[in-house]
Image (cartoon, rainbow, N blue to C red; front, side, top):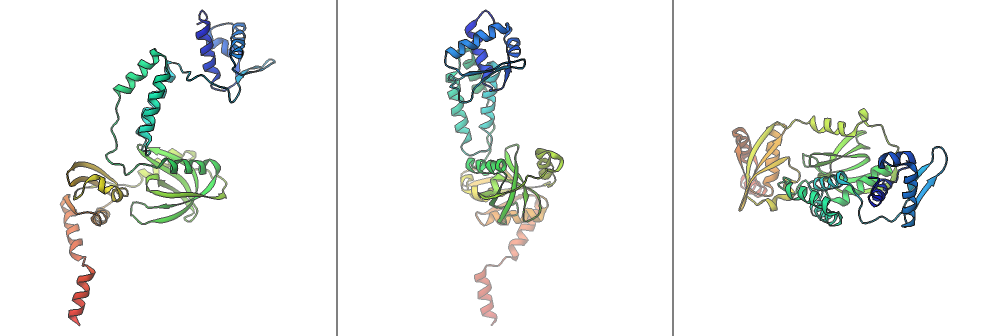
Length: 331
């Protein structure tokens, strides 16, 4: 590397871009040159307009001052691959609009890279594909994500509307601590003021969050690990019962109702959608079927005992108009 001053200077600039404090000996070791050569290269960067600050003394060193103007892009081979992989993962992060934004950013990065790195990143881009979510019911609004992240950072109380799996809307006042991803789902770990306990909230079931301007003192997360706590919380809810349903509507028309249902799409056809739903027991599954039936027709394919339970439920439900007419006759 020492035989190529230009390449060495670019590598030096790339190291300084981290905005960490570098001792001269560290830079010399990274670049495989003498400390005198490092100081000469730093002077060259200053001549080009890069504000490199120096601290003298035994423990002196160098850093790039904040706000320094950077060239379009300075990454090495491994950093280029890391960017490509990171943006590819962001494309399937279940954040509304993120796929298009991430791929657009990846295209811009490719155009700024040298030809050698551009080919490497483009090969990764063109050769890797992701399995998309079958529906958009679990997508998280990026504005909602940003608002909750800010509340976690600033230790600010937050209110929001929340609809758990049972489908009963509630208003929550919480102390937000951490955002956690698990697969394609996002969770908020927070201390619930009304329930006086820790709670995990699925962000795709959360709506209209707003900060209250009230502050709170952060609490110690049980076990000290937010991710582990959320993993235990969501894993402690057994959903071993599975049912297959045929719904009399197309997938795009079912977004609102399926948003609150733990399900997977099996098949979509013109005018119909086949899904599998999961629940703790047949009672919960039957209630889920009833809720879906408020939006569209439902036929239970399996299991047979759930189909029978739903049939009995339907037989016991009587329209109000029928009850009124029957009552009039009795009188």
